[in-house]
Image 1 (cartoon, helix red, strand yellow):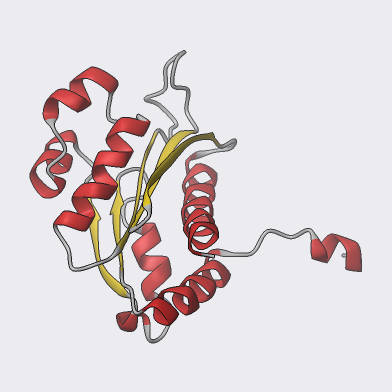
Image 2 (image 1 turned 120 degrees about the vertical axis):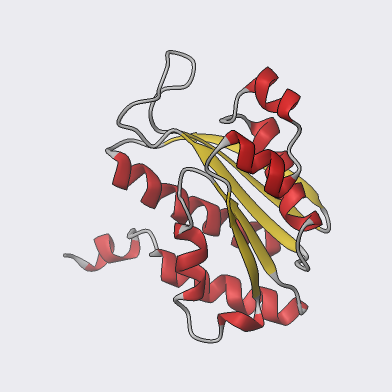
Length: 168
């Protein structure tokens, strides 16, 4: 690898976790996660970092629609209207995670990792992400290429990266 190519390498999840840890500790804030398509991978990446109890409060794995409703308080009518993979539901998941935790910051993801489950409107690789901070709620839709593992890994990176950028 050349020096220039090293500068263009995307940081790994543990790098984003270290950055996130510093940002949250400086603010005396804690993080909660609400995950669907990643099945707890974001929480696992966060808690892989020693000392994460200082800034990571809890994680929700709400893989089913019922879990989104029961654990996070997402309105079933919202899921029926927009689908579980939608910005509206991701935003509701982030807000619900805050309401059901002691954290000040939340991130939520819902997507279609594949190999099945996609549609013309929402193909495999479609992921909705949302971040809730004291400044408000932000969301976006991403379309990640690759197989199930690649989509899930890209989702973890983007979720952590997005929150770091919001907090700086």
